[in-house]
Length: 327
Ligand SMILES: NC(=O)c1ccc[n+]([C@@H]2O[C@H](COP(=O)([O-])OP(=O)(O)OC[C@H]3O[C@@H](n4cnc5c(N)ncnc54)[C@H](OP(=O)(O)O)[C@@H]3O)[C@@H](O)[C@H]2O)c1
Image 1: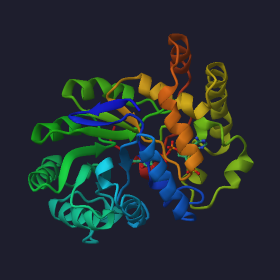
Image 2: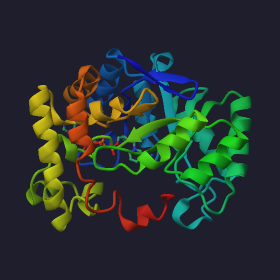
Image 3: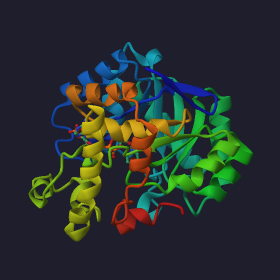
Image 4: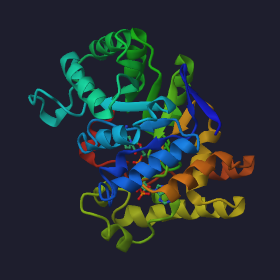
């Protein structure tokens, strides 16, 4: 597998998102043995960046990842996130990046992950009640103590990223970026100016870009706890309109001789060696397919066709979730 450079941190350029193994997607938590096999297969195929978060479950996804990494910890760049669980319980909405909360959170994550250090520790969402300088100060102290190696932010926007980076180097911004979610185009020049990498979450459009979801009946069949059931992009007229995006991705995939999901990932990595997508799956067969996207080369013309796709109709999260995303 080729590599990507996130600040000073080198990672296999296709990573693995572990969230859906425990949280947010249909079938989460139903087959931990297959999820663990998926993590092992990914490592065998060259994946290093493994992504989890305290809120996934909460907690059980970190425990699962910790279990899978027994005996393999040194082979991976282990990333997790804090800030969406308030351990003091006095924060409505649970958004909490106060230094004391980070202290509690990091100890829990280290314990569940079965490790003495986290390679990349992200603030999951910006906390408007806590100055980012205070948060970064607490994270810089954890770096000095060796509990974390690198610091990341997630869904932070330009001003916050600049202020944070002035306190301590930000290694990566993890934000949604895919063929149908392109607002990071505006952020990328800032990240490049500062030497910060982009970790692209939901790079498969939560599965939509693979062509796996085609009809309202496909959405109806999802578990009630599945994020997509309430997502504006997957419901009503938006869903019907967005299908043309999946159709065009499939057309390019047929031309390339790859799957639509592989084309979605190949387009992301074509955007630069400082971008690493973290597609999520809990199945061995799909992790193999997704990793093979590293070998898929798109022509200039195919990239231009994909660049010309319309962006999706509908916000990428529900309104409540969008309220926590800085823009
Ligand atoms: N920072 C944040 O706020 C944030 C937000 C969301 C996600 N994330 C991270 O990003 C990771 C990836 O994002 P995501 O899971 O939301 O979305 P994604 O990677 O775009 O899509 C995952 C979905 O696609 C399906 N899938 C995966 N590979 C497939 C394939 N080859 N063919 C057909 N379907 C396939 C998965 O189902 P199966 O599992 O059943 O294969 C799952 O339903 C997460 O795991 C998490 O670590 C971070």
